[in-house]
Image 1: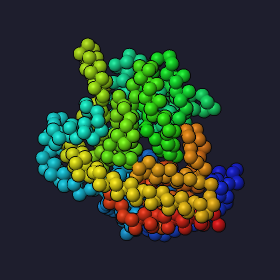
Image 2: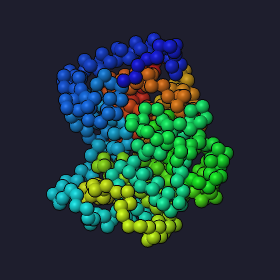
Image 3: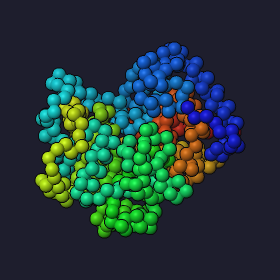
Image 4: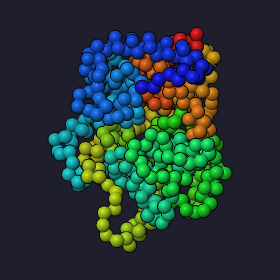
Length: 460
């Protein structure tokens, strides 16, 4: 849990004393509303290191994790009977709602036919063409997480270019891929803080520049030693940073001129539209990765290759020595993934659903912005399709360095708990909110109202 830095007098235009007072009072309200949860998990879940099944569950800013009883559509219920309008949606894993009916039916159907057997099912016959049509690349592979898919795609890039280095943008997020765990500190590359057991200097094989800094990108590619640039179309998970006009066109031109492959990671920006940011804005990646919501909440990811990349990789495979490629996991491409993914692609990730999601996201964007203006807060709102974020600093932000400076964890944690107490759950990281096909207008209105009440308390 984040603690208040009392050496500061204000954060995001709000006095630290006011933030601390609100945090304390909202934490007490949270505890009183959850006596059963407090008894069961208030001192940690038995048998788990750190008291949680996954360490980042301790990063939620609530006094203890919410113990979920059930989730359906865009609503979560805890064991104490509290119901929350869910705008976190599993940090994108359930972006299309909890247990979408077509996906739930597909899982039930497949459950009686076997869960994994290292062989394709009939659903796999449909998925390949669906991925081609949806995202535009001709060749695909299935993995279990976007981290895996990114790792495998980068291995392909190095194999076919014969180059070791990759390039990332400061503030990037690509799961737990080792090579991307670098940052700029006073303009110099360095390993990210807090990496557990990392004994290597990751900057030896990774170049890093600021997002939207095209001269720095051009200089970094000049030596023609970069195998691949890996990027999200919009920086997320770091306070949202949108690309400057023309950024992606120039990025594509510079990478082609340098003989460098371009990997677009759409895991968060699939909020843009049915084909992601890539299809909406006509990007032309050599490699493409999508994880999290692709199977409606069942762990799965996909990674695709352009025609040229696939042909080069096939040529590489025909000449390389036999042995393990270092790519692939036993449970990847299992029939449960196929069933859930097919249902998601055919019946959930529809044009109609995206139109509705975008409409409500625009309403949310406008509502939050109106609250910020009314309360005269030095904050702003950023949006990419159905993904909306309020940022407790002026904007827009242009790069990862500005995003890091804008992040206000103590203030954001206080707002998060206060919103939970008003029946609204947002992502615990960077104030992210998602609109799903199941989200209702009334839920968006409640979020705007709750945000307005909390902002007014802070700005009073």
